[in-house]
Each structure stands twice: as C-alpha cells, then as structure tokens.
Image (cartoon, rainbow, N blue to C red):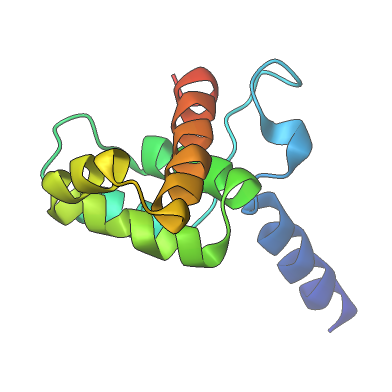
Length: 112
C-alpha cells in the first residue's frame, strides 16, 4: 500500500512540470494538464501535440492565475477576443493582457 501511495505521488508530481522542468535548467520540457492544455488539444491547430499543449499549460501555471487561464481559453475558439482585449483601454483588460503577453513570450522560449 505504501508503495502505491509513493508511486502515485511521484507520478502526480512529475506531471506538474515544476521549476526544474524548463529548458535551460535540465533540457527537458515541462508538462501539465489544465484549461489551456485542454483547449490546445481541442483546437484545430496543426502544430498541436500533447507535449506542446502540456508545455504551454505548465508555463501558464507558472505565469497566470487560474482565472486568467480560463479567460485565455476563449482565444482558442475566438481569436478576435484576444485582439479586442489587447486594444481595450480598461485597466482590468490591460492587466490581463500584460500577464498573457508574459505567458506567451515565456511559452515561446520554453516550448519550442
């Protein structure tokens, strides 16, 4: 029973894509599941893979709140929503876009 618990804990933690999982630290690609990876896998983008979608989710977990991630999911279905938020002058939209931009730049660096 103890072995099962330890194995389960190790498997759960390896799926999180912790800080040492980023390229440049160990050379491996971080992996995680969540709203961004689900939207990525359900999208019609040709470049989508489980590895890529899991990596961008791991970066999202590191750079955006859960609320911000759920808001960003909409961009997969409606790219115009991203443009609308980017051009918005509302302070909440500007804060979100700053967080989203940081996430996108980091994902480009890490998930190549």
